[in-house]
Structures are given as structure tokens and as C-alpha cells.
Length: 567
Ligand SMILES: [Zn+2]
Image 1 (tube, rainbow, N blue to C red):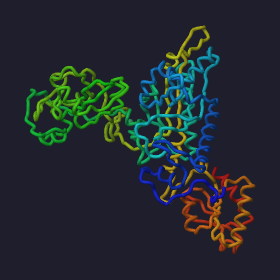
Image 2 (image 1 turned 120 degrees about the vertical axis):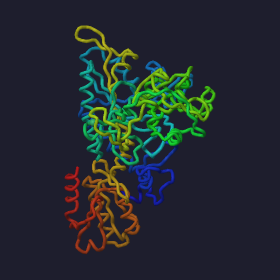
Image 3 (image 1 turned 90 degrees about the horizontal axis):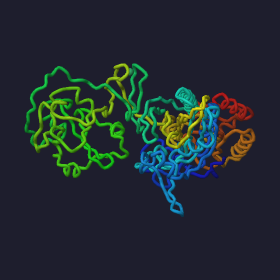
Image 4 (image 1 turned 60 degrees about the vertical axis):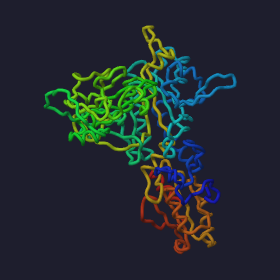
């Protein structure tokens, strides 16, 4: 490809809205262009990378026994209503009506459609197991599209679904997919960590995410260095410090003039925040709920949502709290009625807490559960933090930021039961098919590969996913000998099947070298009047500082050998 003809130009300026490194580099390299919030066009260079990623994924899915098919983006909303997942996805599901006012959804995932398909095609245990997949466009109405290709509303995803006769079969399919995923990330130059995850709107009982550790990743990962425990902070459990050795004292009121936050109250009464109880109000599917947790901990909203089994959860507004007759700043579980109270397990890990008194400028001392207040639900709803105890080995937990680049689910039978996908076993009995679901977003994988492989000059593509292998870089194109040699080499490389980007522009050496580094093409081949004095060209790896001279007659064979060896 000639750069003079390439659609998509490199840019010097970083757009203000590009807040992550991969987003900045993709824009600077002229690889993507935003159409609307969370909606992008892929320009030719990025499209070549995406196609290579797609081929790696397809190869690994086929090797694992997957069969590729293609399902529609447009899906009847009724299918989603049958499984109840229209409510679980909520506003994330794009819906529309056709000309006959039939409701349709733009698929954010395809469990419903594929289960219908399997229901019509599978009758007997002899038809199972099955691994079916597609590579296709998905739609999710993200509340906050951001970070370029990281969180988008339209994206290409590989989604595979496994169908087995029993749990053992599912375990095997799951293990096979985990291995296939590891192979994919290896080939894309991405070291990943497998972590326990929340199933969210997809549903099911068990799920894992593949995480790339990255400073500006939007997920938090909690892990233990002493054992293998690792989980998304949305899901992570931990052992929090216990405050022991106190006899319960009588409840008493204390004046706390002007003190509203946990920090203010704790400082004023000269106690650690872990000796206080924090009240937080949420609205769960329209109902106000009262959450009480030890003052030094934070509420994990994903855990809370799962405990409440609600579809929508948000913090209550101050008006909603006041309208419920609660004194903001001194809200108390003591003496409260007519509102559901959810308590975190941490409120039993200590005694004689400071709590609100539901009176202005007043708190209680020595509040103890269950003597002074009750909870409708007691559960683990605290956010695990680095420094907490490991739930498996009691070692110390650490935390890092990460980018989720794959999510796999043990769905079980809830979708096949609701959609009537059953099979007949060897004894003639009917059972629901046991399902798993396995997704990888291709654009996010591309962005994560950049987050992992770059320097201050630009991208450093892992070889298997590069847009081109060679950057043919003639300097001083006005020199006829340089121009002729470059044209001849370009024709020869193309004829030999090498993937080459030919910088045929009459730009300065500085501009050409900068663009070569920015685009991250692995091998730069430089031709100049100086190299031609010895009938040579200079080759240099993008990831290395040193270059070397190679005689012209050897260059094609040398490049083929280098690329073969590095692949
Ligand atoms: Zn551990």
C-alpha cells in the first residue's frame, strides 16, 4: 500500500476528548473516526488489524471444535420477554418497532436466538455437545460511552455458545474455551489474568473475565499473592478487620452539632471511622431502601443489586430521603420503620458503634446489632479493597486496574428451560440443555493490545496483528536513484507476498520516521543516498534502537526470514 494513496492521515494533535492512551494513538494514527458517542468508523489500517484479530479468534474457535454460523442482529422483543432478560438489560437494550408496530431489539448478545435455533435442531443426547459461534455486530446502549474503542455502543463480538447434556459436559466445554481464549491472547501479545466475575444481565451462576492489567483500566481487580484468588472488585469477597473485646454498653444520645458526614462525626467524637455505622439510601426498582454498613467501608452496588434482585438501582436523592421522613446527616437504623433495611455483615464485626439518631445534630453512642436495631436482610454488600484479608487463605489482598478483554459464563439451564430447549436422554427422559456463553469484543481487544504495547512515540504492534509487516521508507525521494530503488523494492516485496506500507511521499526524514513509529509497523526498511553508496538498505525493528545494513540483493529473503522467525 502506498501511503500517498492510503485513506486516513496521521495527526499531530491529540483530540481533547481522547482520555485514554489507546484512544489518543488510534486517532493520531488515523485509524478510527468517531461518528457519534460510542460509535466509530474503522479506517483501513485499523480494519486490517481487526481482520487479523478476527482470523486468530476464528482459528482458535475452530480448533476447539466450534462451528461458525451467522444469526440476525434484529430479534423479536418477545424472545427477550420470554427469558425476562429484556428487564435485566433494561435501557441497555436498543429496541425499535417495525412498520406493523411489532417490537424488535438490536441484539446485545444472542442466547435467545441461538437457543431457539438449537431447540428446533436438537432432540437427542446424540446431538450434543455443541459449540456454535458467530463473529458479528452487537448493540448496547451504554450509559457512558468512553475511552475510544473500550466502551462503545456498537461493536463486533465473537460469541460462542456451548450446549451439553449435564454439568460435567459444561465443565469440559468451559475448560476448552478457557484454553482457546488463552491461546488468542497469547497470539495477540496480551498477558491476561483470569478473574471471578459477576454475571450481570447475562445471568447464570458462574462467570470469569480475562483481564489485562492496565493503569487506566476501568475495572478494579482484587487478587491474592499467596493463593490463586482473583476477582473483579464487583464480585470480590474479603475478610475485613474485626474489632473485638468490647462489652455492649447502654445506648446513649450525644450532641454532634453541624456534623453530618462519617468523617466529621468520627473526628468530632474522636473515634475511628470503623467505630461508626454509615447509612446510605438507594432506590431499587422505585422503592427506597436503607443500607447500613460499617463507616470505614463502601457499598458494592453490584452485590447490593444481586441481594435485592432488582433491575435498576441508584442512589436516592436528598429530596427522596427527606420525603421519607429521614433526617439527612443523622439517618439511623435505630427506631426506623416502614422502610427496608439491608445491613452489611460488617455491622457485626464490632460493638458500641456511633449511629445516627434521626434527629438533627444528634447521634447515638453504643449502637449494637441486634439489640438496638433490626435488618430485613443481612448480607455481604461491602466493596473488597486491597489490604483486606483473602477469603480463601487469609493472606493479604492486593488491587490493580484492568481492562476486561473476555467474559465467559456458565449459564446452566435457566434460558433453555424458559425457551423449552430440551433433549431426550438414553433412557427416554427429557432434560433441559445445559448452556455456556463465551464472548470477546474485537475492538476492545485491539485497544487493549495498544494499551499494552506502545512507547512515547506510538504503537508497537505484536507481529500477528500488525496492519503491515514492513514500512518501506525511502529518504530524499527527489534523488532519482532512491526513487527508482524504492519503486523496484516495493514491486518486489508485493510480488513476494510481503505486507508492505510504502512511504512514497516527498516528506522530510523526520516526518517519515515519526509516522513509522506512530503507526507501529514492526520492521522499517530505509533507503537513502548514503545506504545506496554501499548498495544497501537499513533495517530496524520498531521495538529496538539499533539498525543494520543489508545488501539490496539479500533484503527480500532476509525480511521473509525475519517475519517467519518472529511469527
Ligand atoms: Zn489467598
